[in-house]
Image (cartoon, rainbow, N blue to C red; front, side, top):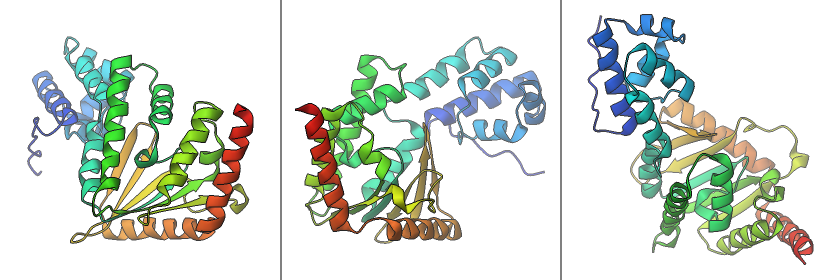
Length: 278
């Protein structure tokens, strides 16, 4: 049996959580399988928690804290993870985003963070994480807007975005906020490094129905995929899997309206929002 993987509790908050969880489990004299059975969850999930690759839900974390006699330490540590302005699982993605020379995105539910206005971002995050205090929400909004500086670099990456029609039609924050957000997208699309397409409802079922997808390209490194849904994300590095996600993206882009008609559709929707606010 191979020795357990060494943990670096200083790598991230989830790694610190995992290190503490392993120490408490060993103190109790339980295997991962035994602890999983008491929760109950699969022992493989316990392994992922201990490696810092996954953060347990609040319910599971509360149960682990109770079983291991952590006296609230695991509960408190999970709250720190959840309330961090930039979650650790997303921080790694941001490192790669800053190095990318091209980003190809399909967005199923919202405008990409790199193109969001402050009002739109605040509404989106405030609704999605209603437990945040005003200060926490302010910090998260500031962190998101801060990412947009990469589009203002002297050598900005190519940003090619395919937006589901639902993204441009759902009035996040109301008609006025949404109108300003779409105007911001239209303005950004004037840059030679930004391309925007819309995948219309009439396209029907498509290859990326599972959720949002990002492909990152680098000057001297293999392409990478990033899958995001809810409050979690996953970086994919395996070459074959990345190639399959790239194929999915190519099919979505081919099914979307061409760039000119996409811009025209967004302009028409802006007019609709204008009518609602006049």
